[in-house]
Length: 188
Image (cartoon, rainbow, N blue to C red):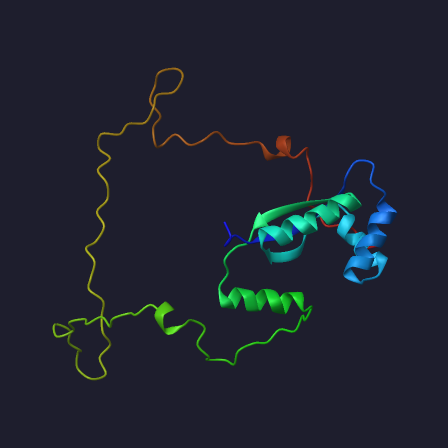
């Protein structure tokens, strides 16, 4: 239990009956920041204010915030890698500079790279035609027409089968088009 460390978060909420102005002033004095900046910590969003605290430090800080009426919560500190700690320190410093690696620089570490063995393809059976002659792809067998001898044309309503010589009924275009005319328009 002595090895346990915690991060302390402000919940962004005040205890019932707590004075908001007094709490903001006390936070500003504690963190030595302007009250406007500290008021943002009490807008309902959780904010981590201390990390990697032992149990005694955590309890002492929580008692202080309880006296101010500021609600807090604690979470076990996550064990982070040196890379992640460096990233967090960089982010906390407020620097927003980005840097890009030069083109061609390795992105993955050596142990993270996947090794691909070369594939040996036997091409001894392949040959080229005479010089200048185009290579031809192997011919595909011709597609055969499907057998439709078992299919029939459905009979009409009167029971007689349709014959191929019988065409579809003719349409009266004048009736369908409302006697429209495509005559040329007289010049104006």
